[in-house]
Amino acid sequence: MSDGEKTTVVTAGDRAFSWGSFLLVASMRMNGMRHPVVVGAMGWTDAMKRRVEALGGVTVRELPSSRQCVACQKPMLMACDDVKTEWVCWADSDAAFVGDCSEWLVGDDPEEIVVRKYDPPPSDFTPETLETWRRDVERVCGDALSESRYTTRVNNPFIVVHRKWRGFLGRWQRQISAVLPADVEIVTKHGTPYFQTDESVLGSLLCFDPDAPRVVERYKANGSVDKSRYFAHFAYNPKPWQMWNPYSLRWHDVVASVVDWAVANGYVAASDLPFPLRRAWWPVCRVAAPLAPWVWRAMKLRRRLFG
Image (cartoon, rainbow, N blue to C red; front, side, top):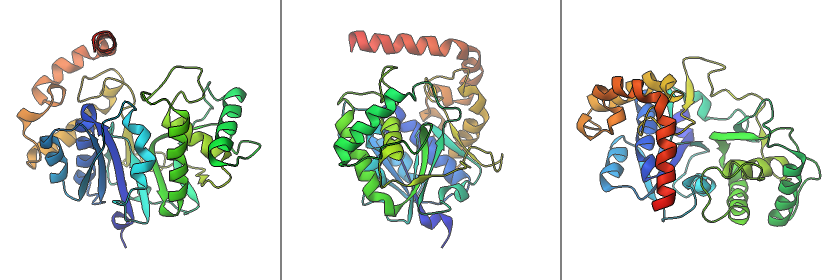
């Protein structure tokens, strides 16, 4: 059995992240990664669903409208019935695969979860946070370790786990429902135990759930093993299909190669691309990139004030 038959890649996004999902799946197909894909879609247009499905081997799963960020449905999607393979890989929809990363989509040991640990520990990993995590895990799951397994927390835009841990994914989903507000965004205010929302909840379980997978000692999907094959995460706002910023410019050639491939193979017309992904606009986008974070903050403030 090939690695592509062993693992399903799962991602999700609301309408604002539909182009990110398209780029993610297109990067897989461009690099010969034929894995089945499940995409959670919230509020997408029919045209966007068809574009992603046309890439082949993609199941679009409709998500009901929710005030919670879509990332809070990660564990539900990873454990859904559309995932029929031995392993499941979560990949955030603001990312792309560089090279054939099939090797990193299968774990070395079914007892482990592939997820990156922060090194050094972030500033919000405090004794107060740990105590809240321990108490909440005990309250929701019925039991908790008295001491944390780890001295840091995890970063979860890329996760690989064996199907034997579906029960653990279910506990992660229940924990999200129990401790996060119904209208939470992808991050919440600093100083709270769940600043990184779904990521923080996963960290709490990996630290204190008595029946949790071990976190791998070495995370390999970041290019530390092979610099020609890695998972590129566009971590900050705005995203490349919205507006290029100084951080995302480092991934410009990666995104451009995926866009060129998708257009050349007829998966999308150049005229249908968002302006930041159109080749004619790239020089303008590069020059404007230093202003993008400020423009984005202003747009976000306007939405908050005026809806």
